[in-house]
Length: 215
Image 1 (cartoon, helix red, strand yellow):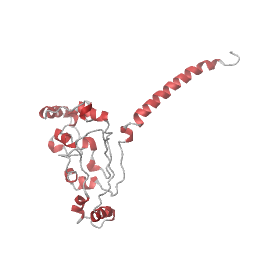
Image 2 (cartoon, helix red, strand yellow):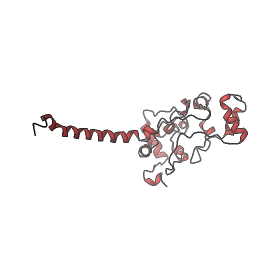
Image 3 (cartoon, rainbow, N blue to C red):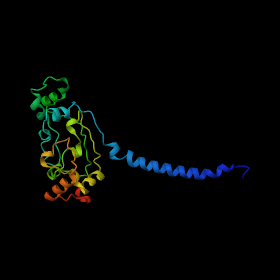
Image 4 (tube, one colour):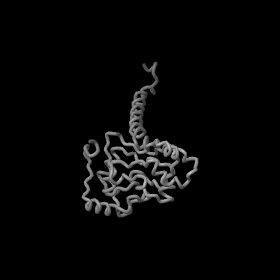
């Protein structure tokens, strides 16, 4: 058959085999990463019906997170503020600003604002905010430096593996009560020591079994 196939043709099966293995590895990595929450969810930054700036309100004006998200310390979810709460200020401040017309229309009609939800967990995952705050996990551990954001965006994947990483080693995220709302907080060099102290003092034992989040 040498007259039909040259010698280099003997290497074709090997080349094809190596290529197939390489393609399979690339495809596996691609599916693992490009279809993971780290790629598909982190960075989500939708436009809102009103260009609400967290940098202006929470950063420059230092409006407390708890003023707008008042239920976060006692409820499972951090509520989106109703229109009337916005009007507490905007009846007097920037009352004729064009970009706030949807707020004024909502207040006059009684129809709620249709804000676009940014942080969305699946219905089968139970995440209560209140016990996490009581444990000493601050806002920015999940939501990033909100006080520097013109438009709110998702900075963490909020995936099951990401949550479990924290539950298995929570020391890195635990803070003093006065640091919870500081969205520019960064773990100090002695955070492992501080975190271990908080973990013991607060008698924390984060669940890592299925029923901790799936009930």
